[in-house]
Length: 424
Image (cartoon, rainbow, N blue to C red):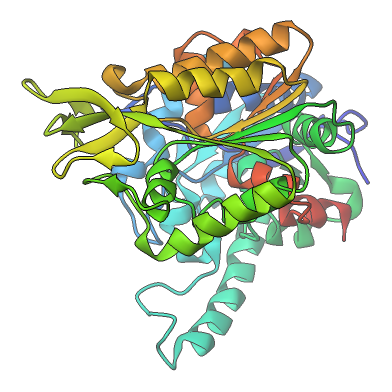
């Protein structure tokens, strides 16, 4: 397999799949971690005397043009980070002129790949239950190949450096690799680091091993939760998942997020944890709020009310938005003695200051454990945003740019973005 270190980009145009799905507010990048993560690969190409064409997605426009998700708004941030005046192609599927005009030492960013349904290769505007769906899916797969071929035509070589999307068989992450021979496609530096970090967690586990899984839904994390139950010593489940577990135990959760159809799944997780001897740590108290959040602006409303309540006894009209003080202590206790730590997902609505304490407590405990010799792996956009917000990025072992990809890798699944480069 070709490696980026052994490849000379002099005189070549390289198309690089980066993950620039970065958070923005009013057209400004609010967390540039993923942009910085791509810099070693991009700078290597330019330093060799090559030209770089960057391609990425932003958000989920579902095959439709949505200027709120346009990559045009991050051009200045990418230019500043890379130290090169980055050019922009307003249509990723019709960028022949921009690519042809690109000179060595220059950089070009293509518009959001997901403005085209062909990128994901899934039919739009048709439901899976529709009898015509399978035929539409087959037709879309053919279009996906054409889309990938078009992207490949812009460059001489391909670099896959978007770990955050490596678990998807999209046009730009896997299919495009078919249009380059083995000597002209490779993983970027970020991908190489990510693979090594996952190996450090799974292949060389130092115990105790504590995993923290946050986020809103049990359904999106159930696969990794079940897999971790066979690997970890402590499993902390927090965030919105707290209330599905609380309801499953017969509690009252008020207006808190709760997956009513996953109560049996929650009970099964508790049962399996006990059978496997895993210390399952669930939040026992919560910071709850009533009419306190403006969800459009992600801000605290004037006059909003908050208080602490048992996670299983939340009144109607109130909702749990962060882990309470007792939960924070329990989380910290399970983290501080660990030698291997994995964190994916916040403990609350950390974007709003009133609900940051739970995530902050987790981050601080991880930093302390890392200082004492633990290997800590932080993954997923929200968890990464947390450690950056709390100023802890330099106090953990490794920050992964991938969320779903990291979880699938830890589950032991083959990632299409890696398999395509290896020719598997």
